[in-house]
Image 1: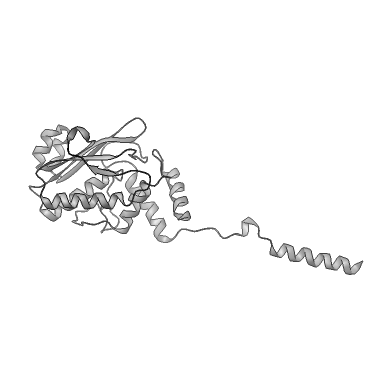
Image 2: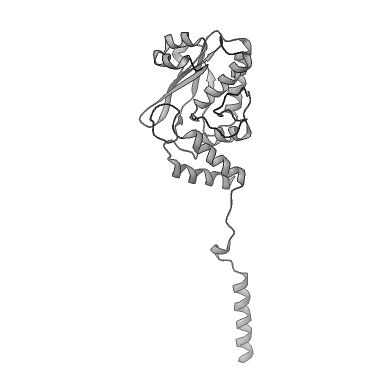
Length: 235
């Protein structure tokens, strides 16, 4: 009887040592870079530089259809096509950008010209064009979905390299990544004047995360932090 008891005790100890409690499982941790991505996303994507709009996520929930006007050079048209290809390659929630031939077909207007000409088209920009070689405006509905927008690139004061930079910056910010930041000199969202004409790695991550199926419109900072952590952990 004693031997049977000892054998049973050994079996129980063996089973206990092989079982794993959920509390003993290692927590999945984000890398330092992934934490930086989340923090940068919250800096750039919540709210706008101008106005008092609430600090929540906003994005396009429909195709972005661009009509190009003004006097764009061949180089600028080629650059626009390249930017669109890059953005479309990063989105996974069904969002896409395309260029249309008629203004009536569009929901987004790009003007290449002078600030004064742009202000004639959009008088609300009059006090901004003197100090800004590029500007964008986006508008949203009651569900915080972007519905229309417009932007300009000053082809008079800016040289070609600067024009390409402004085109990439203003169009990208029109996606819902609307705030500048002092972080990451190589970023297209850098608040200091730069002429970078390509996305930094962290820029590409911000675009793809904003247009990820799990990132909904209307997320506040706490909700966004939770969603982004879940996405990055599961990738």
